[in-house]
Amino acid sequence: MKKYITTAIILTGLLLGNGCSDWLYLAPEDGIIRQEYWKSKEDVQAAVMGVYASMLGNSPGSSGYSVPELMFLWGELRGDMVGLSRLRTEFLYVVSGDILPDNGICRWNAFYRTINYCNTVLEFAPDVIYLDPSFSEKALKEYLAEVRAVRALMYFYIARTFRDAPMKLTASKSDLEDFSTPKSSHEELLNQIKNDLLMAEQDAPLAYSDIASSKGRITKFAINAIQADVYLWNDQYDSCVIACDKIINSGYFGLLESDDFWFENLFVNGNSIESIFELQFSPQKLNPYYSLLKRNKYLRASPLAIEEFFPEDLNTEPDSVDIRTDGASYKLGDNYTIWKYIGRTRDEARVESESDANWIVYRFAEILLFKAEALNHMGRGTEAL
Image (tube, rainbow, N blue to C red; front, side):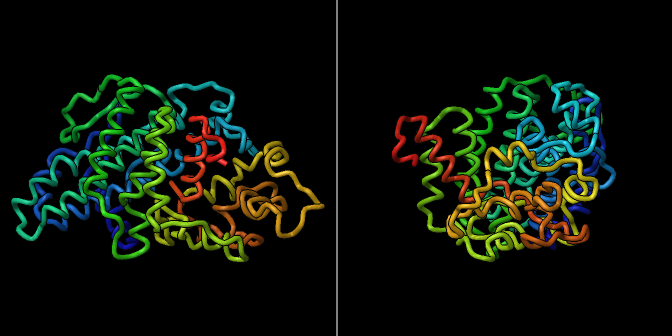
């Protein structure tokens, strides 16, 4: 999985292009997609791996914040769980609600770049089945399901963050295209997301031949997790519970034991029994969080939030201590560093060259909480508990 993604990071820049416009930053270089590519099942596989590679970071020649950086920043800067520990003007503007177009955090080009790679696979991969006799219809459908689900996930992040946003469902094939795509409504975005997920669910595999692929690529259960999230966001509580139950009753996932190794298994080694979908970083492709949270220490866990959510009780029995606190969610002795991306163990930090913790998009514990929240909204409080 990691070998394929490392190769795809290079191919993504070479094969799909990285030109940009003033609006959506979607345009690839002219002439490369059709003439030099899309001739074999290997080309399709490389393009699909390129979709995952684009989620790990910017392609060569691209600038601005990457998808994994924005996944973190869009989710946390406007909340109360993290605080600014070092002045960075772009972050301060977001925290204070001063949102301007020239703020890099407000630029969605990294997400639309990934969306365009998905659109490119959806548009060109079906023709390859007529050029490569060894390319089966089943393999094609599975690839299309993967990229359709990734596209839905990207649009879901955009819809939650910006509400209304442009919706592009066709590949950008020429620099001569008009990229001034008008905004779609929040409802239109969510309807497209739900439709994409329903289509993808039909053909996505339950698992792949190895753990890293089963956790790092779209499976039927990853789609169910996105569906549960989307339905909960859209107040469709019955549908949320159904999607959650598909995962809960599958037998594929569970909660880690709270032993001495749970932190390493969940956050250091990654791809644990709790994991449903993770972005797969490696020594060859490090995540962006070390600079953000350790070396430059722009952000840290909010001391006020820690006191509210994880109060220290010296009288707590050892077996009842909340294992999510010091040395897990944060590290008190390291000035409230957000620890799950930084720790090698609960006590020892990684060095920067080891900053390869995966970004966990969905895990089993979150699905249980999704279901509990939906049940509570449905007036079924006892079941929620």
